[in-house]
Length: 535
Image (cartoon, rainbow, N blue to C red; front, side):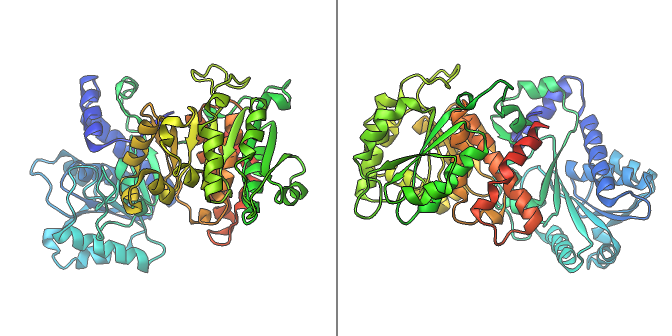
């Protein structure tokens, strides 16, 4: 199942279309409330004897909360609905909740919040159904006071968890901007689709673990919607894995050439090569400076090696471009940049290899399949990008089928924008850059973004401090290069590669924590992640 990311306006349009298709908004609300209640019941390990406080706001999000409260009470939980801000005079969901014996308290009758504080001190779980994905407004007054109380209780009581419905109160649903007084949730139940507010940071940092809840929108309505941004899932990733027939051989899975390394960055080249092997590339050739070759060759017994001429500082000499171009038709994909260093010479090398040598990358490849553009696929990372940014008119000269994988600082160098501006508008920056450069862009960081020049985007749902270590980007480059060599189109290789990388890091974090992880820790997890996805 494909899961997209939606704005508030897009979600409202979907609900209107659902009504026209015969599924009413009230039905969607009942479906959402039931599904959320089932999640809470499972999280609590059953309802009998458990205490739940539901924070109820004035709109549809509050109505969702009342539906949840009704089901939880009927399943045996002790439920109190805390009306944070006034409900409508005619309120069928309130009537149903009261009929189910939900206890309701009103903040108007509890101005000092003593009653709410008492309830929170005895609750196992708090449900945030105050504002949700309606018209955004920063929390103020009693709403801000209630949020402050809940956040304090959550930090004081480890046993108390907070679940937000659709998105935490205080997070802008369309931008991810977050008010300092926003709810700090342990989990967020995204109704139908995640909203951009919890896909972007800082809003995503308030959401906790994001779970998508099916609310019963008709499939025809979803299929007809124009939602170009995808939330990458295990199922979508599994569909992209290259097929591996029983009668295959090493040539079936392509031959990746990695151009990487320098005297001071030997490990980057080795990490990229090992990652390519680990995701199934049939052959991997590693082209490194002559002084680096014996160091990596001793470690990489499965890799083919191509020593290159080097400058006095141990970086690749520009003359190496001719050596590579003479052999380029032997390879299925090219990865460039890991640990190459930055100098006038390396910039000239990149220019000669990738830009002036355009014709070498237009020959058909055995592994290009039915691709509309038969050019050799390329992934460029790290100093490859920094050198590229110094080349004259590089976007117009760069071969098609290229994946660019900048972190925010490298994206700032490529675009001329300030890094804070990159971070404030990550989705827009990635989409605009992919369109302007006519290339696939993977903008790294928490919730990395992959953008295609045709307008498609996906968000990789990983935010993991374990990846904040040198060399993890080199592993990602090797993963993407290995997938390109196996015939995946650029956009698919980037998004699948990012998902494999993020999933492996999550497994390590779950086992060892998020400090002390080194990039090579990711490598043995990659085949296991792939095997799990295939299952």
